[in-house]
Length: 157
Image (cartoon, rainbow, N blue to C red; front, top):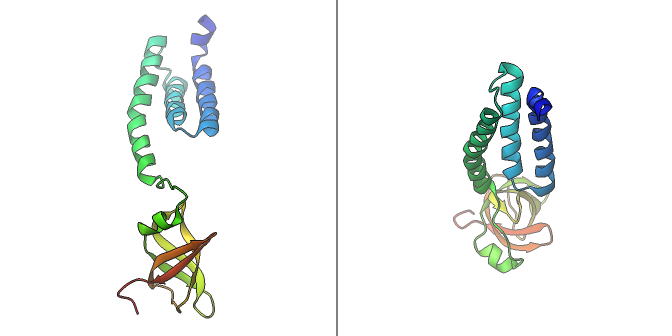
């Protein structure tokens, strides 16, 4: 235990790396948060040589982890894509609109940038029965594999 306290910055640095590896295996963000907390303790010991006591180090680790958990989980929930059921018709019902980013020659295919993620992505290849131009708003009519079938958004001509 004596060697652990005397080389505690190494312990916290190693713990930060191990928690980062655990996060890479689990994708829960909890290990990531506490990896950052361990890195904070490591840096405080390495740079400022404080806190000296094991209790102070554990307190800093716990407080940093709890304080970081809320904003990281909030960010994660805000940026997560909605779960899908595999029912394409149900997914299309609430699908986002988008803007044609690029149209191939002929204007019936290209790439569309959606307002927000749909089935895991924001930018998709598309096909259209009508000619579309870059910048026009479209809505999703159907999905065939990894290609969206789009129609002009109501109000566009």
